Every structure is written in C-alpha cells, then in structure tokens.
Length: 604
Ligand code: ATP
Ligand code: MG
Image (cartoon, rainbow, N blue to C red; front, side, top):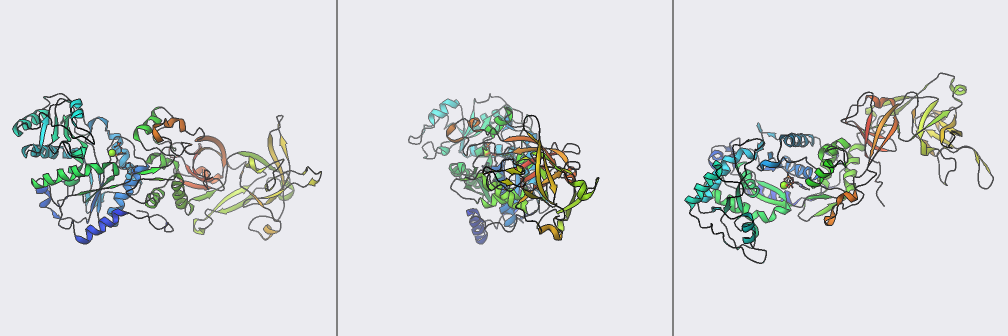
C-alpha cells in the first residue's frame, strides 16, 4: 500500500490507539483462537492461537454507494489492523433483505480496494457476509428463549411503542412477557416456517422494561419479513434486527475492537448483555469483542446522508452516483482524488469522541499535498483567444516551427521533459490581454495614449518556455469583441538561452500552439453547495445547491495530452489539478475534469 507523503503534519491523536496498545500490553486478547473462518465457540476453540493480534472490521450495509464518511471508517479500521499486526474483515452487514443489492456489494468491494486496502492475510480471505450467519443467529435466539431471556410478543407495533415508556417514565410489560418458553419456541419455529404474517409476531429480548436505557426495554431481536434476500433468496422469512445481529457477527468473527460511530453508544449495554449471555451459554468464544464509538466525520459543504445523495441522483441534480461533485468514493475518484489523498485526509482529521466539523478545504489541501509532488505539468488554455506573432517570418523564416521544452515536473528531473512547438499562431488566455489595463496589470496591453495624454508602448511578456513578445495591437469583430491579439517576437530572448535575461518582464503567459494543440472538453467543477451547512436544521438542502458547480468549456491543450490515459492527473500550470475523465475521455474526444484549483478560491 502506498503511504501518504512524509511531510504530513504530525498525526492527530487517536484514542483508539491507546486502547489497543493497552490491550496488547495486558494481553486482553492473547488467549483467542482462530479456526480459519468465523464460527461459534466449539469451532474456534478447535483452531490455532489467533495469528492476528487484533481483529477489526468494516461492516457496511450493501444498500448504497460509499461516501467520504465511509472512507474515514475504512481508513480507521484497516489502518489500525495494519498498524498493530492485526486483520481487518470486510463484512457485508446484509441482514435487511429489502434494501440490499449485489450492485452495491460490487461497488463497495471496488471502493475499499481502490482506497488501498485488502482483506487477504495469513492465507485467508477475510471477506464475509452476515447473511451466512443466519443459521447461528436463529440458534442463538432459540437459546435465549430456552434460557428465559427472550419471548415472542404479539403486540402490535403501536402497542409496543406506547408501552415502551419515555425517558422519564418506565415502560409497561407486554401481556406476553411471561409466556412459557416452550410456547415461544413453538411460535418462533412457526415464524420461521412462514406461518405468520409480517408484523404479527416479534421476538424480544427479556431484559428490563424499567431500564433508564430505553434500548434495554425488551428490544426486538427477530422479526418476520416475507422478502427475498439478495443472497439467501427465500430461505428465510425471519430476519434478525441490526442490534441483535451486529454483536453476533463480531463475536463469530473473533473481532477484538468493534469500532462504530457515536450514535451506537446507547446500544453498547445491549451489545454486552447479549454477548455475555451467549458466551455463558457456551455458544460464543471468550474473550468477547468490545464496542468503541467515535465521532462521525462531517465535512462542510458536503452531505453524507444516503437518502439525500440518492435524491440528488434521482432528481438529476447531478449526473449519477459517480458525478465528480458527489462525495461518494466513485465521485471523488472521478473528480481526481487519489487514494493517498483520502488516506492523508482521514489521518489528519484524527479520531475523537466529540463531534467536529471538518472544513472542506482540508480535503483539497490533502489532495494538493499528494498531487503536488507527482502530477505531471501541462499547459492548457481554458478561455482561448488567438495570438498572432506578426514578425515570425522575419525572425525565423516562413514555415519554421520553434521547438520548446519544459520539465514534466519542476522538482523532479527524473520525470523527464515535454516537447512542443512554438508556432506563428498560438492560443492564450483571454484575460492575458487588456486594452484598458488596471494599475498593476503585467500582461499584454497594446500601444496606447493614457488618460494624461502620454504615449505608452505596447507591453512585453514572456511566453512560458519560449520568447519574450511585445504586444502591438489586436483585431476585433464588428461587435468590438477581440478576435486576435497581435504581438512581435523579441529575438534572442528564448528561455534557457543566454539571452533570456536580456529583457526583464513581469508577465509570464501560458499558451498552446494553435496548429499543434488539441481542443478538449474541460469540466470546471466547484463545490456542489454554496453554503457550508446545506442541510442544517432540517432545511431544504436543494436550496443550497451551487448553480456554478459545473461549467463546461472548450479549451486547448498541449499536444502531449491527447495521449493521456483516462484517470491520469495533471497540474495545468496556473489553473490547478485536472484529471482525464475516467468515463468519457478517449482518443479524439479529450475530456478533463477540474479536481481543484491551485489555491483555495473560497477562502475569505
Ligand atoms: P445507514 O443510514 O444506511 O445505516 P451508514 O452511513 O451508517 O448508513 P453503513 O453501511 O451502515 O452506512 O456504514 C458502514 C460503516 O461506515 C459503519 O461502521 C458506519 O459507522 C461508518 N460510517 C458511515 N458514515 C460515517 C461517517 N460520516 N463517519 C465515520 N464513519 C461512518
Ligand atoms: Mg449504518
């Protein structure tokens, strides 16, 4: 795996590392065994001492595309396993039949691999599906019933809600709470056999209806759902609730540190209650996993709610899940974000227990820090106007083209040099010529008489990697729009020759040969939202959409770029970082996406 640049600032603190170091020191998990696959106590106890010092997991539900928040969780879980001689499991938490699809499974696998992580270790592939544990989960539920720790309830959803109580009032026992275990077992079997309708019966843990923690007031653990599952088909019509399934998944996989976001803090007592009971019953191996919570990643100008991202796609506010403005991993990737930049970002944002809001610019800074040292440079004109070098034939002779060369990277000679020709007509940026320049303007201006009646000569600028030129005027169309800038070459001033310093100029112009450069579609992306908190306080986030978030221009690019493979990043000199679009860029139709500008254009 590639590591982020070593000039990165000192790593932000990470309380989880302290916990893991303490556990390693005291040998909390030293006695664990691992049979080579997930399984119950009997299975694991027949295995070897676990070769993994710790086990973490990344457990997405395959019900959507991953986003920058998931990248945080991926970098955290896989990163801790890597740093402490452990293994991180890639686990699909696919216990909810209705919303899950194979398409999402595939995209999640791709995203995690692309980010630079893998799940092959110690000759095992640690890719797991929670749905493979359904049989065990069913058995665990039966055990709880037998032990008097669960019962089948026949209250309606409304009755259960009404009887749950509030933060200040205890709940009321269900009339079915003391149903004999044999009766619950029978009903639970019938639920599995498909004899009951969705919602008519539900299995609940029997804990404490007066608990101050509402999650312990007899939480539902198994429900009836006559629904087709993307992997198990119609084998099952009862499905475990997330709060029941997740701890069991962790325990079967011998996870040591089960890391989740803060909203699950109130679930931890049930997590522990459940695993301790199942371990006492001999179903699960000890030592048991522990849950730790950290604050989820929030980034300004970004929304990470799956529902809202889906709305953006469905209502066509963006061009799909991989639109380069989306905070999805596929979107960030198409925008030109690199795995290294995202890893760097996740590391720098640290891991804490108190929620914080990360500034969007940190994401761009991490990207620039990664690309600065490795992206090839290129000259591109985004807003072209033609410049004619009127003394070309006198200086060089008709038909001549003047070879120029530039480093691929100014600080990395080993990356080689790029070659292109200066020709009598070139493209320059429209903003590099002004008839009436403001004070301090150093680029091309024609000869003129200023406000005080003084004659001012046409200004001089350097064509980057080429010659100094002097502006002599311009051509305009009937509407007064400038159609060409006119200039003369100042002989013997070519960059890299002894005469280069004979004339001092302040302006340096980027340019592309009109006869040899290639036209390209360049998509100028900007932030999708123009407000830092697009969905704060329940407001309609669509109102905060930035109408300028995508502009498409026809640009001219250095000839060498025509052959750039899709997905390659460049620094377009003076403009920023751009990537050859992974979908639409091809020979004959060059398409670049702006990843980010060189400097933060949003800073006040
Ligand atoms: P859902 O609303 O569907 O549950 P989710 O974003 O929680 O959405 P999961 O597939 O359950 O999606 O997430 C997988 C893992 O990614 C979980 O462990 C979750 O805690 C973590 N995760 C999701 N969003 C963030 C975030 N913004 N910051 C850090 N971790 C996150
Ligand atoms: Mg979730």
